[in-house]
Amino acid sequence: MNDELFERILIPIAGPDDAEATARAVRPHLDPDTTLIVTHVTAGKSAETTIKTGRDQFAGATYETFYDILYRDDLTFEWVTLEAPEVAAGLVDAIDMTEATLVAFTPRDIDAWKRAITGDPGSRLIREAEVPVMVFPDRRA
Image (tube, rainbow, N blue to C red; front, side, top):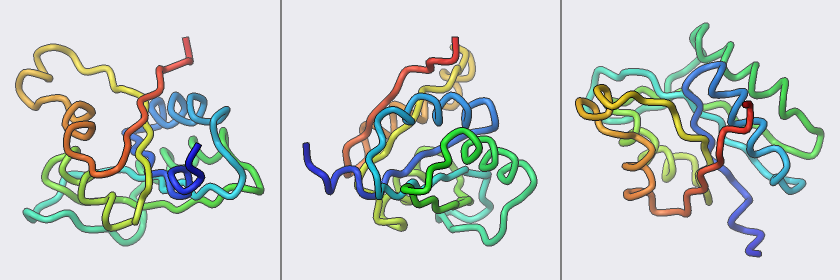
């Protein structure tokens, strides 16, 4: 396996429940000295993706859930809250902004009506990312 692929993993999380599912899914697959770039995307007002300084309460609670489940001394954590007009576009931009070598996430439950209106951010991320994307099943059940 290519060690460079797992150097800097961008991990998008939508909220505390998603943070828990994603942390539990990726935990068995992490190598020592991996950097996890944990990101949450909030609605942005400009047409460009920006890194938001500070963490709002929601993102902070989301990050804490992820960290509590996944903390290990041999992992490095970076916390990046993004402001973007669309989640998938923000994540694609974040790949370059954070120098991620891989994206890993668990799929979100999106009902058919919302998917028809907004599209599926996970599918768009897979199509548009310039680095490999790994999708892990939600193992909480």
